[in-house]
Image (cartoon, rainbow, N blue to C red; front, side):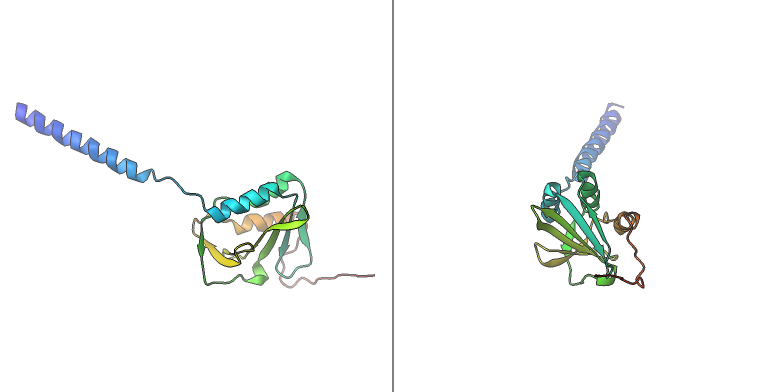
Length: 158
């Protein structure tokens, strides 16, 4: 009986030890993407944000910190991986975060999640799956923008 009890205790202890080791493996700490961190730093200092869509004339333009943060937050959790794909200009948002009247950060991103970062002059894809194109579209449309690819661009210069 004592041997049986020792065997059961040994099995339980081994099981608990294995669970402890395995649970330590699953608590892998997320390492922030340094390119995204640099973008967030620039956006945090921005005095304004401007967003253009495709070939439209209209631009989303905001100077209040809440709106600047709202646009920046769309990119905050991304993990970027370099890609050979290029941005589809017809469905892209070109976003400028401006500090001291200079483009501090430029991002060009399309509906497929292909991203061009102006500072790196390279194309990336979001591997985290957190990029939300529809959130940018909603901000743009709610500010008066038109995403119809056939919309005309009537500029009247007097």
